[in-house]
Amino acid sequence: MQKLLFHDRGNFRAQALFLGKKINLQSLENYVCLATMPIMVTVGEHGCAVLLGYGAVVLFNLEPVEKVAFLTKLSSQVIDPFANPETEEVEIQLKLAESERVKEGKILLHDFSIERLQIVADILAKSVVLSHYETSLATVFDQIEPFAASLQSEHRSTRQSRELLRQLGTTLLVQHKIVGRVEIIDKPELLWESPQLENLYLRLEDEYEIRERHHALERKLELISQTAQTVLEFMQHSSSQRVEWYVVILIVVEILLSLYDIIFKR
Image (cartoon, rainbow, N blue to C red; front, side):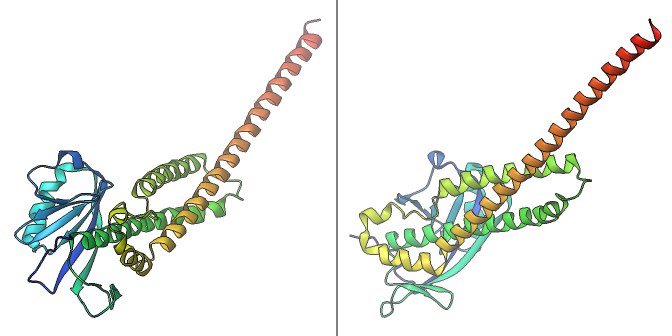
């Protein structure tokens, strides 16, 4: 039997935050656990929160003071926190007569069961993670465009090339690690135990364009990877040319020294 929350409420606010690269869920203390897969705990007088190990947290029905207190307490468990966490808010409404979906920017549910809120949290967390990396990739693309145009120039800066490669490498490493850990397009394990909620999950996944945004992110990652490979090839070619010139110069010097010996030391 599903346990219901917020019996006296017809609606409340939910907020998802991408706090850092990881949340240490093993060290959580002094929280009343409502569920696992993902972990849900009580917060404040009438609220709760879902915590995801990959660094996201989703808050339900929290007052501003309760939110600040909870996030302050949780901060010690956040590994590599972001200076400006990505955030996303939505109103959740109880609507028995309508289908469960997103309507006019609000999520409509038949009841406020723990399992339904876990599904909502899964989607909101994935959405906020995607938003974070969509923004960071846009910054990388701004750097790639002028550099790609300069590849045809003979006055490329080796230092700039190496700096760009460093940034690209860091970005690729983080993106692959986070996207792999979040498992964006994988269904939550909760659906194995509550298959009746799959339609709700699929509707929310479609409304938030989770798969489309994930595929777009993958395409951008692939383009960044190809750009990094092209830069490496240019650098290797330039390095190879320099080595060849060094060899030619040494041969010429050797020939000149030999001629010197022949002409002046006979």
